[in-house]
Length: 206
Image (cartoon, rainbow, N blue to C red; front, side):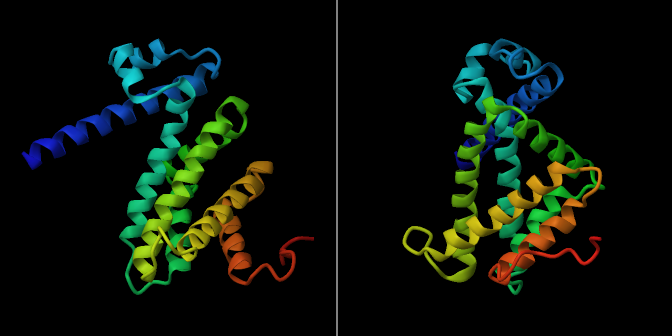
């Protein structure tokens, strides 16, 4: 029975991911306003009713791809070596998700840029970010021997790491052709770990 439930849950997760990817793909091709729930369902080869079983709006479906990537990152953090510091583990996971030379990294950066350019998606993205901090804090709690439900430490650590990643991505988005997003993430983590004693001075800047 347990195996059947596992298979059922995997199928549901696969359907949800297929709907999300269809939604984001259509939105990036045609624009958010032009996309409908019916079109998303058709692209994923399911019924409109099935779409509404998983998502309350097209915006939620579009941004769900980011949420799915965060789920993968949470599992990646959980799999990091136990002897690795929490800061190092979080930085490695954040960098792995945006590695520009990989198809996965390029895909994520394009998705992030698209969401930031569409105001209709930003409220959904905020929900995803909050959920991400909660998910990461659970892993941080496990690694640090703290309690996510009672202690501030795991939430502070997870929130700080997410802020580093977001600050780096925002800086990259301002000049994507000129800046290396991986180096920006490293700089953000370096500054945060040092306690932000002073503004960062890029030694290579003129």
